[in-house]
Image 1 (cartoon, rainbow, N blue to C red):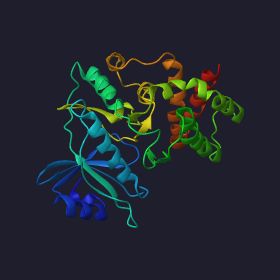
Image 2: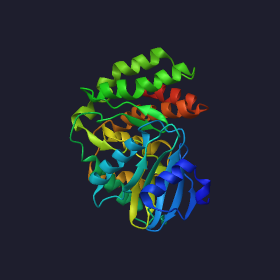
Image 3: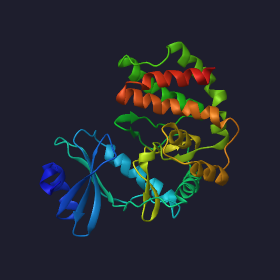
Image 4: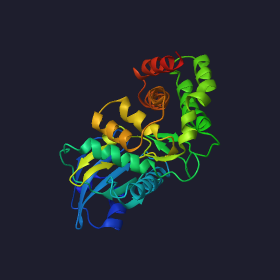
Length: 295
């Protein structure tokens, strides 16, 4: 990809912040925005852009990255934010990040990632939620505070995604089954209030956990303060994390009894997100998970 292959508005805005773009090579892995490795006079930069990005999406990502970077310290790599441009009438939303050089994972990659995530989760001052709404993929993610963790999970996570699914006629299961789940959430998720809030990555699938020359790294967050088991539930949903990751996390910070059942409750959110983004077999998978939780 040459500089001219970038959208003109994006190229001009990035060059105004970072200087002349000498080359731009596509980088795969995402399904919402376009990513590329941009070469500038000061070295490589990771550039993500999306002509359809809603206003504030990349600003919210930048805020999340900064929060994670502060919490991770020396435990995990989180790319620094170099510059960003909000989406406007020209559809030129973009974010420029520190380039993290990929490298094969070392034998202790999973262990370091698990311990690092536990360290991030120990940061959680404040109540459930976040200071602004953000996005999960291309879907809005409301984060305004709630008094209890079960209430937050019901009203800020499951209910909005269920509304999307109903409008698209993709509702997994029945309304009666979801009401039964909502009635049981105070008991099912009581451990969240017991543990207290943690800073969450919010979208911890394997594509957002990288092996770099400087060690394990996490990218593309959807941050908020929530129950720490949510990140582990997402990590377990689609695979890609080894046993050492989960073992190291639990050694650093043991989980409360009942974590396996809560995992399925937390996975329902991410399954609903996939229903609303992609449809297909996720509808049946979500309905099956819901019925397993209720059984």
